[in-house]
Length: 312
Image (cartoon, rainbow, N blue to C red; front, side, top):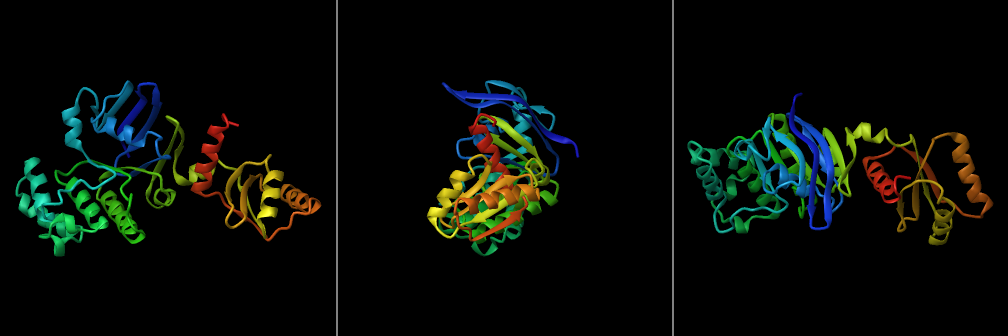
């Protein structure tokens, strides 16, 4: 697949706050690219720069071969942007919202395009009801339907499932996959690891203004040791004692509610045996332990942990 978005050394600051510190990545045509990061990591800023809504302080970016800074009109014709919250006009019906966007984009027969999209996004029954009466999931579907008018090559989805219930979130995933199967490139920002695991062909992790990891889900998981040991304890006292004993290991996850700790190991029997014997010699009671394969969540939490510890 050819590159459809190219970003090189992109920088952006707000006064003394350096949000993007020279990030670089490419997005392949027709795939689902996910920019993963915590709140405030710079995901929306990145999208706003690529969508020509904000100026960068430095670096280069191109979309469909057009420079994002000097060929903004051509870039805008190639993309569509759906923000974190649905931007539909609540006073208009679903059909009227779609027809309005069609007229603004000067497409032929906006009435027919509206009918087609209402059917495609399962909104026909609510087509002539005010959008203010729609559920959150329906408003989000209408918002994305509006973004498809004009046949964009790239759709930016900034936190598309924010505020949706689990059923609506799953329905949104299916819509994203369907759009991708039709050749539309999806640029997705999210903080939901399950969403990334389910949808993305390619993933970049943005942390403190830098791309700290980039690859497929499987490639990112290979960055961690193959051994993931999850240990569960019967009580809080045992959990806290074990946590202190395990401070020399990389803790991928801990859950104080279920008294469990997951640590990264080499996966070798001798190392695991030594860990368990250490608990026994210190009278730390165990409830259960199991070896797990690293998950995308393990990767994310471990990388963020490494960064916070100065790369250690």
